[in-house]
Image 1 (cartoon, helix red, strand yellow):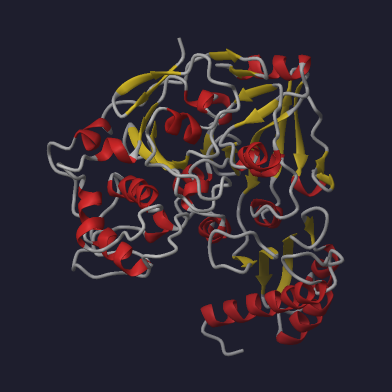
Image 2 (cartoon, rainbow, N blue to C red; image 1 turned 90 degrees about the vertical axis):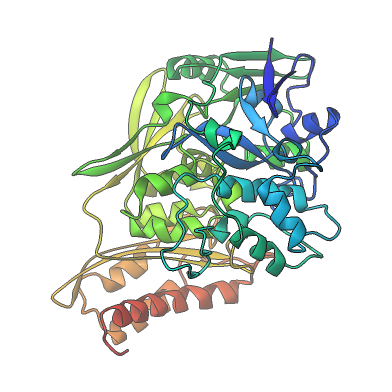
Length: 479
């Protein structure tokens, strides 16, 4: 029997169509707190809490978009909805603060805000400031406002919601959800669900997945489902075979060694950010700009590369870091430089029976790095242009440079002409100005609904000038 534990009670999945989302499944069961606002993971009205393996505690309550995940992917798992946090006669602390501080008007978005806030409330390493002061985007109680970057409100206004978040204290000693963090989360279970329209399989080992891919290369692999879920909801995608790979141990390895960083493809972006702990500054700049915390809690680094999208945020950063991918199939493994991975619009060298096992970043890192993202919104938006920089200057001369670009061509790419214009030349305003003119023409910047070709060209050139000025300022030198 396939089940999900919802608010402490088991609920069956038998007979539920494979492509049913967690959101629709919950609402069909009468749990209507979670709402559908966009069906693509941008509004947060659907967020729920999932018990996931933790980094700072055995279990962490993680907020995810219920509108994107297939219900079948949570077989054997444990979730909490807004209804499970508290009751009208006994509000949860998050609900109480939202109520008394005027954090809700129409209430449509409120349950989603509450679940995202609860995940941050229960974050094991949330630490109040010593003097009770607020830092940029962090409250005196240690609340990180990025936890709400994927939740939109159209009528209340964010000030009272922020006030509610910053008023939260520590969980009480008898808080059952806080105590739940001390026990391991439910392990992944082998799942096979077949309905009239499709089949869902969760293998327990990587060889099993590779065998499935060898026999059925058309199988749709899903991890966080932040891309596939949108296709299912908005474009009617109904793959006949879905294979879940998000909990495979072989795809969740992480090593930071003397010669390289190895990141498992099924680690979520939030997990990678915390595991790196700022040790790769270029990625540290990229993570907060990648969609929202809700999306990063589900999206995997392998999934973002596997789609082959020209506007993904990880490729420009990883291209600048000279990353390689380990591709695995039943025939064995091979290593491909990311710069050679993309071959056309959403096309790559990855064979139909292969998957991305890990991402490898060589060490040491360049001393000057940056990630620039130009988009219409500061957070939770698709980039018009994204640029990753890794530059090494020795005795005033550029000895090494890698520049990764996204959003300016059919594929992510290295700015080879600009790199050639910089390498071996003095790191001066004149050199950078000449190279910026070259960068403005890289990738034959395109026209689309996000930005014009002229705008993209201008932003590319300005980006390199900005990078130069930022690093001069960091060194205390006037531009």
